[in-house]
Amino acid sequence: MSSSASISPAQAWVSAFRPRTLPLALASIFMGSFLAKSVGSFSWLVLALAALTTILLQILSNLANDYGDSQNGADSVHREGPQRAVQSGTITPQQMKRGMAVFGAASLVAGVALLWVALGTAGAWVFLAFFVMGLSAIWAAVNYTAGSRPYGYAGLGDLSVFIFFGLVGVCGTYYLHTRTLPLAVLLPAAALGCFATAVLNVNNIRDIRSDELAGKITVPVRLGPVRARRYHWLLLLLGFSCAVLFVAFTYHSPWQWLFLLSLPLFFFNARQVWLRQESMQLDPLLKQMAMSTLAFTLLFGLGQIL
Image (tube, rainbow, N blue to C red; front, side, top):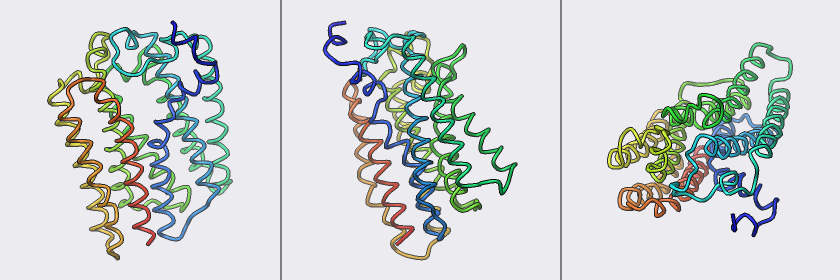
C-alpha cells in the first residue's frame, strides 16, 4: 500500500480514468464526423456532444473495469499491467461504485442532449432507437468485467469493442450528422472496429497469465500466445482492407489514399507484438496502437474531405 500513500485522491481518480484510452474512444466519433463533412452535412455541436458522451462512457467503462477485475480476481499479484486503483487501495470499492454511478448518469444526460440536438422531435422512433442504443452502451461499459456475469470473462470483449468502437460509433455519428446511412460507411466503421479490437488484444496478450489464473477466458487465453499474435496481424490486415475497399468503391480523388501514410505505424505495432514476449514489454504498444488508430482516422478523414 505504500504507493497509494504517495498520490493524492485527485491523482488516483485521474489515473483510474485511464486517459490514454480516450483517443481511441474518440476515433470513431471523428471518423463518423469526417465522413459526414465529406458529403456536406456536419454540425460542430453534434461533434462536441458526441465526443463528450463517448468520453464519459469510456471513463465509466474504465472505472467498471477497475472495480470488476478487483472483485473477480483478475487484478491480483500476478497481473502484469499497471496497478489499478481498487487493487492498490487508493480508491475503495464503495467509492468506485459511486464514481460509476456518477459517470453512468452523466453519460446518459449527455447522450440525451446529443439526440435532442441532432434529431429533435423529427422522428420519435429514431430517437427511441438511439436511446436504447445508448442504454446498451452503458450496460456494455459496466458489464464488461463488473456485474454478476461479466461478458469479458467469457471472451466476448472483442465482439463488444468491434460493435461499439467501430460500427455503432462511426455509423451512429454519421447518421446523427446526416440523417442517412449508406452501406459503404460500414467499411470504415469495420476498420476502426478491427483496430480498437487490436488494442484490446494487446492488452489481453499482456495479461494472459493473470487472466487465465483468474478464470477470465479472453480470446488470447483461448488461442494461446502464438495464435493470439497471429490474430493481431489478422485484425490489422482486415482493418486496412476495409479502408482500401471503401476508397475503391467511392474513389474520386488521390487524396483518399492519404491514410496509407499511417501503414508503417501499424506494421511497427504488429511486428513488435510478435517479437516482444515479456508481458510488460507489450504495455507501451497499447498506447502506440491507440495513437496509430487516431492517426489513421485523421489521415483517412482529411483524405475524404480534401
